[in-house]
Image (cartoon, rainbow, N blue to C red):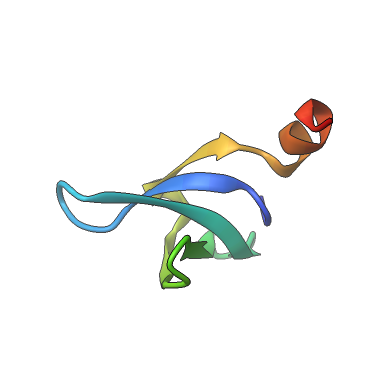
Length: 61
């Protein structure tokens, strides 16, 4: 999941987008950095993957 572009829930009705920069597969914790460089830490069940890193490689060019 590291490197994936995701949408993440920041509050009850608030969402943001960013890139997964860390993912602990054992605990399900993720760290996401948005376009402004702000980091969000939370659980992987609060995110939706928009683009997997492998998808970007396939569609590039």
